[in-house]
Each structure stands twice: as structure tokens, then as C-alpha cells.
Length: 86
Length: 199
Image 1 (cartoon, rainbow over the protein chains, first blue to last red):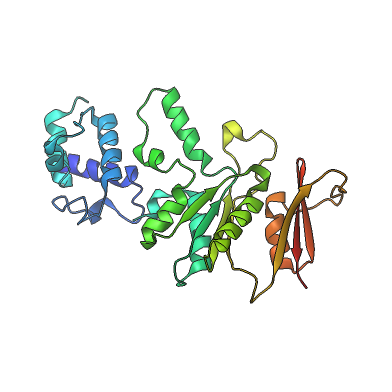
Image 2 (cartoon, chains in turn green, yellow):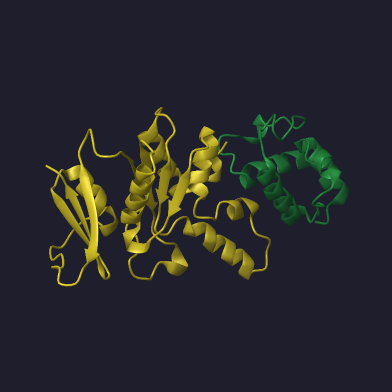
């Protein structure tokens, strides 16, 4: 799971062009949105697309679950490992 | 966190706007670019052609007023903005727009001009932009500082500019403004724009 968290950190940095951050700067348990990394709704859409391309996971557009899946890198890793197709 | 969203063109345009406005109070702004952030449109069109999902970030920034909008968001500035594109007359159109805003009572208008060479599928068309560039200036009603007049007429019968200019055409207005020269004539199709600096 740690390897997947590491992979997702890299995906977040590359996808969102977080040029000043390294994977080790991201706390896997810290919030991704608003607080923590300070990402916004466009970032969420972009990240959803990247996860879909990389792991074949589909995110429902209006699901309350999304809020939970996107809470942190750790939550994303849990979600991906449960639903990945590739 | 905004910086990561913008590519080269947005970065140079915003740099020019920030440098020019600095800590001055907000004023209406005119963002002028002949081609805008064409690279994003190309990227989106390629994604469409390949039937892959479009990048939401690129989509949100592909409109002509996106760069000005980011400036507005980053500064929390709700003042009016225009985004202008008018072919070879883009710079003149920006100043006409600025004069309109001054006539409506704005004490000052920030004009930001920016362009970069068109990307690959469009690069071979005529009037390619020679180099990435961005500049900005603050325009006020005549009073303090140098005074200029801009008039537009038919180019028929007017002598064509004959000298070979080493500077790309899109920078000629900027050069005129900073050079202190008395006049500059810009032929574009059937129109002749005359820039005049009052002595």
C-alpha cells in the first residue's frame, strides 16, 4: 500500500504541475483539498481523469463517496486498490 | 497555487501585468492577444480527435479571457476586464477599448498585450508571431505624462512603409511608445492607424 501511496503522490504532482513539491513533502494522511495541499474543484476533476487513465477506476460525478475518496493520498490509495482494473 | 496552472504565455502576460500594476489600486483592464493561448486549444482538439477525455484544467483555461481571469482571482480584484483579439490591429483595438473605458469615467486603464508563436498545426500560416512577448502599460486621460493620439483612416493612397524593419511587426507599437518618436503609421489591410505623440 505504501508503494501505491508513493505512486499516487507522484501522479498528483505530475498531473497538477505542483512544481515545488516532492513526493516526500506530501503527508499521505493530510487533506488534499482546501487545507493541506490547497487543491480546488478543477484539480479534483483533473485528478479524477488521471486516476481513470492510470488505474481504470471510475469516479461517479456527484457521489458523496468522492469526498471521502479524495480526502487524502491514503484515502485515494485505498480507493484505487479496491477498484483498480489495471 | 495559480502559477502552476498557466503556461509560458500566461506567465509572461501575468508578469507584465503584475510589474505594471504593482501595488496600485485596481483599475479596469484590457487583455489583448491576437492568438491567445492557442496551445491549449490544440491540445484539446487533439484529445477530441483521439476520443480521449479532455483535460478539465485546459478546458477551463482555453477561453480568451482566462489569463485575465486568473489575474483577477489571484488578486481578488473584481474590477471590469475585457479580452480583445483583433488580428493585426489587436494593439490598436486594445487602446480603443481603453479609451472607451476612460471616456466612461475610469481614471486609469491597464492594457496588457501578449502573444507567442502559434503552435505546430497553425505555425505555417502567414503573419506568424516571431517571438513570445508581453508588455503592459497604464493609460490615463490626457494630463500628466506624454500625450498620444490614435486615429484610424483608409490606407488608400497612403504610402506603404518601405524600410525593412528588423523588429517584428507586433512589437512596433511598443517601440513607438517607448522611443519618444513623434509618429508611427501602422498599415493593416484597408486601414491605416496613425499613432501620434504630442510634443
